[in-house]
Image 1 (cartoon, rainbow, N blue to C red):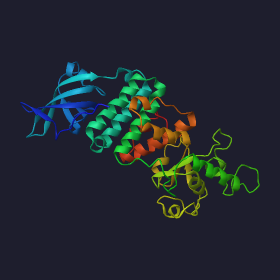
Image 2: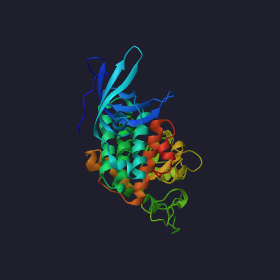
Image 3: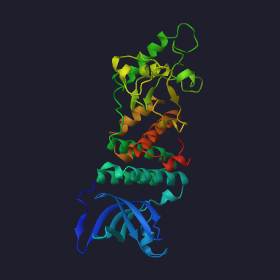
Image 4: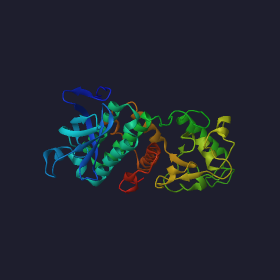
Length: 344
């Protein structure tokens, strides 16, 4: 991964000229009718600059959303005024504009970088992360776009300190492994109470969500869960206890963990429920393959990690999880998700 060196604001050259390694995220019009660019830069994070010239000017054409390269900026320190003097475009990612799903995915990348103030501070790394995401969206088939967006979101929430631990249950502290799946399977078998109806004593379908909502839907495998209240993953045993609204889950930590349900049954959300992430009591079912994808992606370069695929239910859960984390990172609604072009 190529990472650009960081400076204080930028490296200066004569005549108050500044040079930024930049990715253009957004253009908007000022009240006076001038164009303003918002750029993600390696040297200073988010930078707004004015662009002058008519609609047919070469500079306006070069400095368009998602263009990446070197930005030459004139600074008037007395007025704190920055004007784009030139833009040396190296990448423009033309395929983003050829398919609506790609364009909206790129818009989510840009919107989240803006709403998280440039990713929190490691600006050279965040700039390269944004470029890698757009490069993957531009060069891969549209079907791989989900993975490019997912990986961008996962790495960005990690940089912001919001990435959950993928190794241990936030409730009981046990490892999130295939062994925990086997242990939970034994608990389900032991809790059938001889009814033969596929439910344990708490009314949860084997491998399903609360009330057996997943039964008969091809989703009958045991799974992990993500708790938006506790901000972490639950092992299958604690997920089953959550589905019963039990305060007697395995381990003392489960009874005191923030967000662990007490009283009524926990409120489970399916991946298609876009509003779930705004509710602190919501739980999301996460299949083992999705959790493995998150772990494996941390060990690989971006371009390699996006090539690993998932089946439909695992991908749907992964997207719902990461879109929920993105909303929390932004601390505000995300227009790119509300549009409906990126289904959750």
